[in-house]
Length: 123
Image (cartoon, rainbow, N blue to C red; front, side):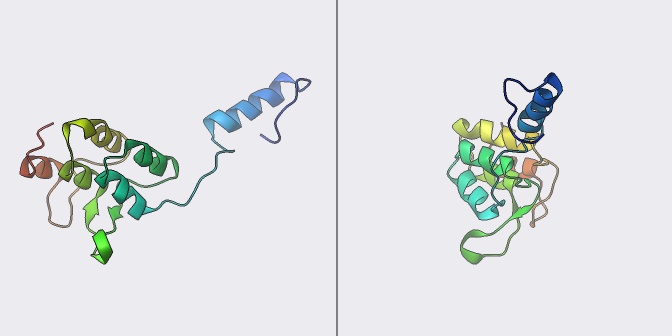
């Protein structure tokens, strides 16, 4: 897929452009994944910013940086569960659906399911 096809372009050229744009997202502007911004978005229960982080290639299975220079060790799903409210369930679900593994263990050895029980988040 190269430049945008014109009205005179053949069907194959238009198809290649559509696939490149909408399937491969070749023309989308991407920024570098920023784990600290993801951490802030989760703490603020900001689903739109979490979606943006995912679109920019953020790996939800990667350890997040600790707050204010503390050592990393918290996964996105663990943090989302710890700060969850009933309104933030879609955020937790999105993280699970896109690489946040419920069985992954945090630095303390607990899975997200353990944290859900610990922080009284049964959903």
